[in-house]
Image (cartoon, rainbow, N blue to C red):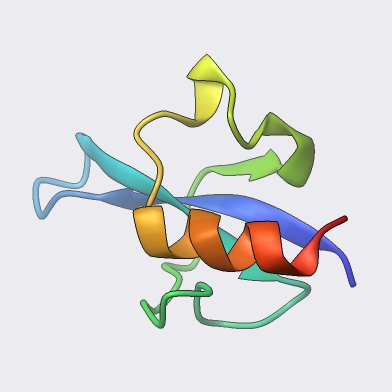
Length: 68
């Protein structure tokens, strides 16, 4: 299964709230939040780096349980 990271913006549409992990082509993040169409994305190997900070705690915990 391929994962990717998607940005969640604050209501102003500019400010990053946090990054979420998404499984494959699903329309929700692993924590259950809906993924906004056209949101910024990063590859899953950016998890744990400064470029994917701040990261959703729930998505991170679930991702660690799925990826060796």
